[in-house]
Length: 313
Image 1 (cartoon, rainbow, N blue to C red):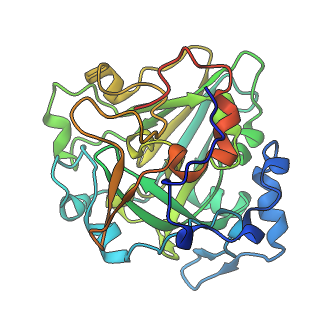
Image 2 (cartoon, rainbow, N blue to C red):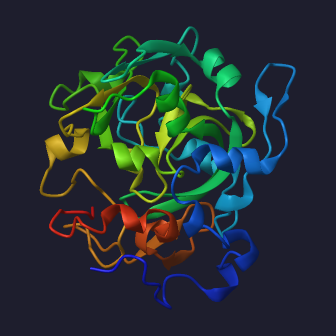
């Protein structure tokens, strides 16, 4: 199977990112997570509340308009707070201070990071990424954050580590969804170490130039834009380097519908609906879905020798 192939129906030509922004991508696939920040050449500026105002990394322009902030912050999936899209109201009860993320497992220097620690020590930048939900809707968000690889470098990855396991917060006092005992709480997701080291893998602490809101996964979430959105753990509490492949939340519930990889492919439908197109949040426009959500030039090589794996959905 060839993953780099472009097809004419993937996106209208008027939406294609200019060549000047994408030239040289393949040459920077390896070890470019930090280099992207250095290429900006501008420091992050601090606001009065201490949250940085970083320069935007234009390497990742999405070729589509940014979704309105109101739409992106009032139409959300966060099952810990409920199953409807209006969870932004109950999510406001989420306590954001103090908050730490434990990084442990097969690392040389296990530690707990506060959000302030991360803002001070990580290479903070803004990236505008697409987000494609498995439910066939999508949005484009300007995220503030840093490459996952920067955190992994800070703790030192041991040779036996093969996967990264993400565990989200489980706070019964404020998360009514946890009462649904048939779900395998806490929410767990994972990726391979190679995927984690890819330059697109991003830990998010803000959106639209502001600290992340609870309904969007505050105070810190994960995002890999070439995968369906359920792979992005919100309100992270723990990141572990492990030797065995973790079983993710939805994979544990419905393995016939949701797999470990969950890469986006318009030609592979969900068992109950097509993935050939998506509804753009805010406009209602339906547009063709792109292979790897349009990020194949960055990530296609990760799967070149995994044709026997269930890579899609």
